[in-house]
Length: 64
Image 1: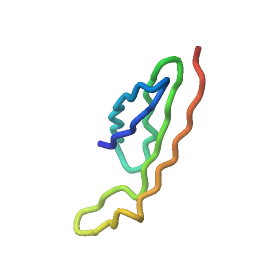
Image 2: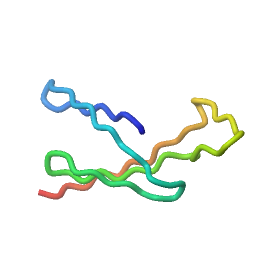
Image 3: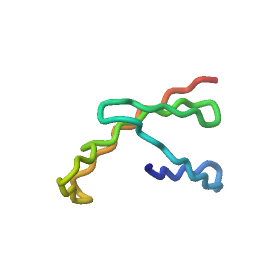
């Protein structure tokens, strides 16, 4: 689970994003926008991932 903080007109909302599998792109709607994300690398048993190795691809599309 990843936490995305969104600030809109001085109001901050915590949006929890859950990626279901290693290659899935997960989407979530928020205030007239659709957010699709992919977090890499996906964790693997026995492999250490350093914080700086993570990459987030985030696509935001207006729906309203």
